[in-house]
Length: 149
Image (tube, rainbow, N blue to C red):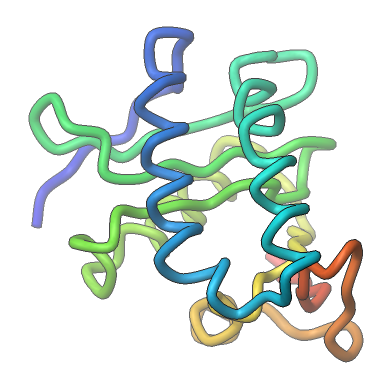
């Protein structure tokens, strides 16, 4: 599967929101309690709107033709705040290549993430190591993980 990487722009914002909401609702939200579901739904839109703020985030999208199939956004130079790939493209290495693009662009020697319970397998597979047990903030379950580059 051939796709390219491009910098995320303002015109991508609506597409990124639809993509993230879709993936969250299908894979992440079902693993949360009522409080977590409400909290993640409430935070998602405002967090995604920050992706285009280059003072906060750096972001790259994966594109096939004119279709955005995934994106990664990081802040503080090495913290993955968002990584979403359309469900149809799960298992094709898109997320792994987005992490690779982030490593190259950021130059980070250590990458951190609060991995959702759904994404633990992926992050482990690409070399991230859990730094503690599962945690929860406002019912949103995650595991802090790190990857040494």
